[in-house]
Amino acid sequence: MFKKTLRILLKLYLSTWGIFLLFYCIGIWRAKVSFVEAIKMLGVFVPTSRFLIGFHIFFLLVYVLFVIIRYAVRGFKKRGWTLALKRFSFSLVIPIFVIYISIKGIISFNSTEFFNYDWDYSIENTSEKATNRYEIDGKHRGMSVFWSYDQEDVQKATKDLIKDNIEWATVIPFIDQKNETTNKIEGKVIPDVWSRRDSVTMKHIRRLQEKEISVHLKPHIWLREGWRSNIQLSQEDWDIWFKSYEERMLQYARMAAKMDVPLFCIGTELRTAIQHQPDVWIPFIKKIKEIYTGQLTYASNWDDPIERIPFWKELDYIGVQAYFPLTTNRNPDLETIKAGWDTHITALKKASSQYDMPILFTEIGYRSDDAATIAPWEWGAVTGALTKKKSDQTQQRAYEAMFQKLWNEPWFAGCYIWQWHTRTTAEGAKTNVDFTPRFKPAENTIAKWYGTVGEKTINPK
Image (cartoon, rainbow, N blue to C red):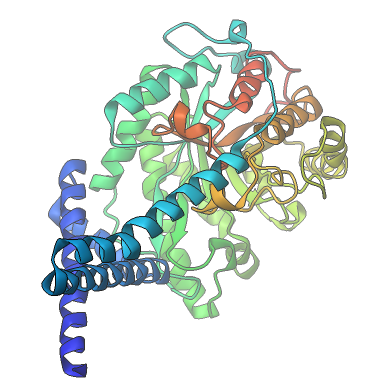
């Protein structure tokens, strides 16, 4: 009996892998990904704990379904369809129906919000191309954009960027690294030879430039496990790591030069890499300047002491990932959020004065839940609609407070909102509690402020 059960489990386990690979192959075929690239992608995400946990949860569901079907079949053999349908209904159909109704009820409750926002259509850009208010006040009216493979979604989302007075867009290519103790970034670099992934990135850049949207090229290291700000290596391994990082970033600098990108970010949230190798960064930046003549920034995390970063004077902007905590309470009013900026503004203004350089928010974003201003850096979970109370009002107030406090400051060079997904739908936004402002009142607030001209920003170097 045990051996039989084990054989069944093994067959189901292998079949589950087969189902996964079938859907994966369909996905890469639709996305027109090459076979070699598809194999590489499998090697990247399959060994991760997140994938393996998710896969084995799916396998357990497959096994439970098999047990229920076997139970119903045995009932059919005993007493025919009556017992089979009874067993199947009580074991599967009714529980699924109850779970479905419960989930829908929880999501409906969490999404219910008594917030009436008067959308102002008069401030929207109805032309086919982005404006250029940046030339007037030096403010970056930016958005971090993530693209889907659906061209209809992409075209609609690009039109909406223009409609919302967005003039700059961050394009983010991801650089793969296994974890916090891996001493080398993955992949090989041949100068001026572009991979398939590079070609896709350049395609996104061209699409934006065709609409006269300026591009901020901002490569991110993406760890399959851990966070790039916490990379921990021996000194010998740091040397190996930085060499591989430099090779990859110089390639992106070549891309920025080739594509005539006006702003390039030399790194994002690399706290330990700077702490352990402070002396390598200025020579690295000089190498970038030999390739690329546009403006440069670095994206420091909101809680990184600005004064401990040794190379600001080599750049044009002090970049900040501006996920500052602003309140301690949920559903805060506008004045409370505004007051939460005071301490942070004092520090930012001091840093700008010290380095005679404008502050640029390389990222800023708020989830649309009632705790968005408490810990803005926290990612929304997949189950967010089930576990969080939706609050478009909190998200909208958070942006309104930020713009009221900062937009007209001459040391403030603007911001890049996190994040804009081209696949977002108006229907999905009704229950979405994640960062995207699309189809939410925050979108109109951003458009309103981006449509105004602030005070002239101090000139970057």
